[in-house]
Length: 142
Image (cartoon, rainbow, N blue to C red; front, side):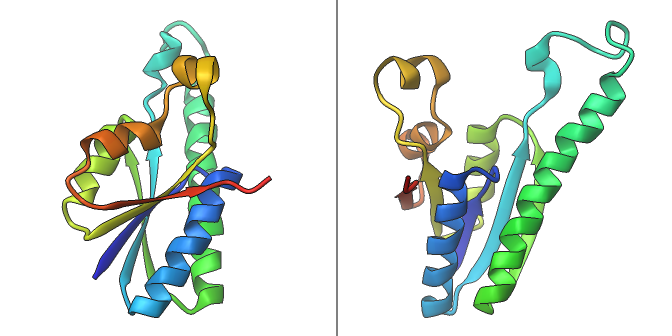
């Protein structure tokens, strides 16, 4: 069995990482920890407009690397071997593309509702609606 555990380093995704790793240990499953680096195009800027754009890109990538390092550290503490992947793309599409090589997706949710969810959107909701693999959703504890 292969589990895909996307993370963004948030408390919700950290909770999902913990639950996913616990499940993987119990099932002797293989784990892929995934971080999706969203293109900075959402800022509608580029290097020609903002001189510190390359530094911004580097900082943005460092966020992903930290999230994966934290998740990998949890995997080591649990004794679960885990592959890490940092990919660039739109989160829902990248998670769905990666999921084709896995049997189960374990991901966190912030539990937003109402206008907050409408305006902010939800990667978890997008994956739930389009996934061809089972998805376990772990809600962040506060």
